[in-house]
Amino acid sequence: MATPGALRVLEHNIISYKRVWKGTVFSSFVNPVLFLAAMGLGLGTLVDAGGRAAALGTTSYLAFLAPGLMVATAMQMASFESAFPVMAGMKWRKTYHAALSTPLRSADLVAGHLVFVAFRLVMMAVVFAIVITAFGAVEFNRALLAILPAVLTGLAFAAPIAAFAGSLESDYGLSSMFRFVIVPMFLFSGTFFPIDQIPGWLQPLVYVVPLWHGVELTRSAALGTATALNPLIHIGVLVAVLVIGFVAAIRAFEKRLIK
Amino acid sequence: MIEPLVHAQSLVKRFGDFTAVDDVDFEVAPGEVFGFLGPNGAGKSSTMRMIGAVSPVTEGTLRVFGLDPKDHGAEIRGLIGVVPQENLLDMELTVSENLLIYGRYFDIPRATIRERMVELIEFAQLGEKVDAKVEDISGGMQRRLTIARSLINEPRLVLLDEPTTGLDPQARHVLWDRLYRLKQQGVTLILTTHYMDEAEQLCDRLVVMDHGKIVAEGSPRGLIRDYATRDVVELRFPVGVQETIVGTLEPLADRVEILPDRVLLYTTDGDATMRAVNAAGLDPETVVERRSTLEDVFLRLTGRSLID
Ligand SMILES: Nc1ncnc2c1ncn2[C@@H]1O[C@H](COP(=O)(O)OP(=O)(O)OP(=O)(O)O)[C@@H](O)[C@H]1O
Ligand SMILES: [Mg+2]
Image 1 (cartoon, helix red, strand yellow):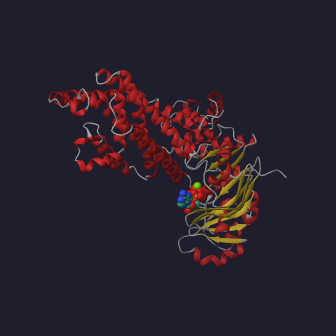
Image 2 (cartoon, each protein chain N blue to C red):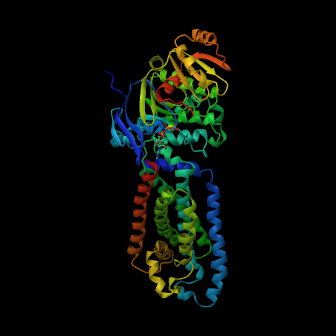
C-alpha cells in the first residue's frame, strides 16, 4: 500500500530535524523551568501571600500559571515552526519546488508540515508536563491530559500561519505577525492573569482569540476546573481555525508553487 | 508507427498577458534525445515544466506517455525524471540524504533506494562525497547529484533543463558522457541548452525556439545543411572599415552576414573564399575559417546570436 504523501514529507522533516533535536529538547526543558521559577515561584509567592490565589480559582499562582504557560508555549512554538520552515520551503531552501516535481501535491506538503509540527508539539508538551509536575504545580496524569488541548491549540496556529507564510514574498511580514499578534496573545489570553482583569469593554474580544479557548481547555484539563464556556465550544473554535487554516494553506501553496 | 512519448499540439503557455510559449507542436519518440535550443526567455523552461506536469497548460494539447498532465499529473511525475534549471537540492542535507528523501517522495522502499543509491553515486562520481553536506560540494558535483537524483525512480523519460550551464568544460564533458550512457540504456532524454556544441553532441533531433515559437526543427546536421553552408569565413576589420567594403564582399560568398564586430561569409568552400578575399586586396585584422554550427543556423533564423 502506498505511503500517504504527508508521511513522505514528514520523513524529510524528520531527517532534517535529527541534526538539531537535542538542542530543541534542551530548550523545551529550560524554557518552562525559567518561567516557572521566576513567575510561578518568585511572583507567585507574593500573589499567594496576599491571599489572592482563591480569586484565580486555583490553590496557588503556580498552578494557575503552569497550564496557561504550557499552551501559550505551544502556540509560540507552533507559530515559529510554521512560519520559518514554510518560508524556507518556498524561498530559502526551495524544498517544496523539488517535491512538487515528484508525485506529491501541495496538500501533501501542507499536511506533512502540520504532522511534523504536531510531532514537535507533543515532544515539547511531554517535557513541559514533566517539568510542571516536578514543580508540584499539577499532578502528572493531569499534566499529560493537558497535552491534548495544548497540541490542538498549537495546530490551530500552525495551519493559518502556514497559509500566511506561504503567501508572503519576504519574511518581513512574519516579524510583524509575531510582534502584533502572537506576543499580545501570549500575554493577554488568560495565560498569566485571569481575563476578568482586562477592562470590561475589552473582554468580549477574547472570544475571537484562539489562544484563550486553548488556555481554558488546557487549564481545565490540568486542574480539573470548569471552562469559561461549554468545552465543546472551545474545541469547536480551535478545530474550525485549524480546518480553515489547512484549506487556506493548500490554496496559498498552490497559488505560489504552481505557475 | 511507434507511439510518441511526448506529443504537443498548438501548445500555449501564458503568464497573465504575456505569452511565454506560443502555439508550438512537437513530438518526441521513445529512445530519442530531443533538444530545445534557444536564447534566454525563448520559452524552453516553460515548455519543459508543462511536460513535467508541474506547470498547467494554458491552451492546446499535451500528452506525456499518452496521458493528459491536467488529469494525470501525479502519475506522469511518477514516471519521469526531472533535472530543473535550478538544482533545488536540500543544501542542509548530505548527498545520500538528498537521494533518500527524494526517493521516498516517490514512495520507493528504503532498501531499494539504498541499492539504487550505490549505482547512482557511482554514476555521478560522488563516492567520496556521500556524507558531505550538499552546500559543501562544488557546483558541478551538485549538478551531477541533481541528475543522479532524477534517476532514482528509474524513469524512461528524463527532462534536463540546461544540464551543463555554469559548468567548466571538463565537467560538461563528463556530463555528456553520463547522458550518452543513459541514451544507450534506452532512456529518452529531452534537454534544453544555449550551447550549440552540446546540442550537436547530444541531440538526435532538436527544435530552435525564439520568442515562444519554434522557428526550425530537424537533426543538428540537417539544420546546418538547410540553413547554413558547410563553411564559414569570419573576418574582422579595423573600426569603420567594415561598412565601406560590403559591396566588395557580397560576390565572394553564398551569403554575407554583417555583425557589429565581424563579417561572416557563408560558403561551400572556405579555402577558395579565403583566397578570393586575398585576391580582392582586402586586409582583415583576423581571419577564421570554420565549419558551420547551429549558432549560424540560429543567426540565420533570427538575425541574432544565441548567447547575448
Ligand atoms: N512564473 C512566471 N511568471 C511570469 N513570467 C514568467 C514566468 N516564468 C517564465 N516567465 C517568462 O516567460 C518567458 C519564457 O521563460 P522561460 O523560463 O521559459 O525561458 P527559457 O527559454 O527557459 O530562458 P532561459 O534560457 O533564460 O532559461 C520569459 O520572458 C519569462 O520572463
Ligand atoms: Mg530556462
